[in-house]
Image (cartoon, rainbow, N blue to C red; front, side, top):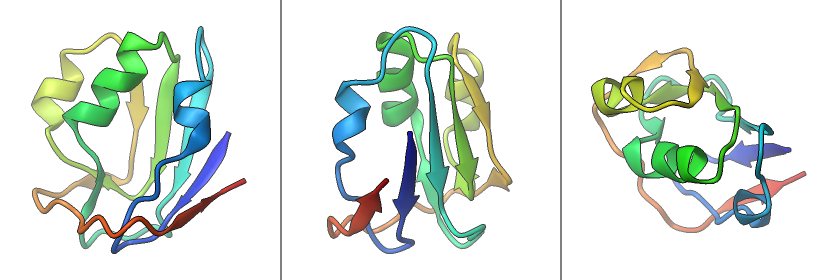
Length: 92
C-alpha cells in the first residue's frame, strides 16, 4: 500500500488496520525533512500487526525505540519535531 502524507497532517489510512503478515506500508512524505512522519506509536502498530516494514519518503522520530522493534523501517533521516495532525492525506 502507498499512502501520501501531507506535511501538516495525517489522515488515518484505512490500510493500516488491514496490513498484516509481512506486508510493507509505503508513506510518501514528499521527501520533507521539516517534521517527522513516523514515530514509535505507528512503528509499534506495524510491529504488532506483523508488517515486514515501513518505507518513509521523509523523516522519523523516536529512532532509538523504533530500532529496538522487530520491524524494518527505512526513511530519509530523523527529526525530533512531531507533525501537526489535522487529518489530511490520501491513500492510494
